[in-house]
Image (cartoon, rainbow, N blue to C red; front, side, top):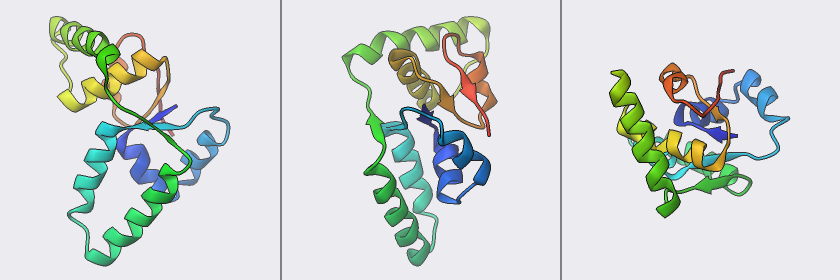
Length: 127
């Protein structure tokens, strides 16, 4: 299962529903894209809160797999963007990369963002 940025934030906040859902996941991943978005979010925190959340993230990353775009991601990314454009339902570019990684790795995506439901070939899970 791939955790989107909002899932990372909820997990850092110890959301019980999310923790329960992850307890049965055989594989827990996030993406380089989500990590960048999360790090950007930390820039708006107080220094003390940023340090606390960074420590949580460092501990999480010791257990989780980070998926990064590579040459095999190019085709799923282009296809996702083209399909959504043709349907008149584009999503943010960063989310196209995340969807492409979910498609490439054949993994579900844990996210509150319902626009992922428009991407064929991936399953979005909510909590």
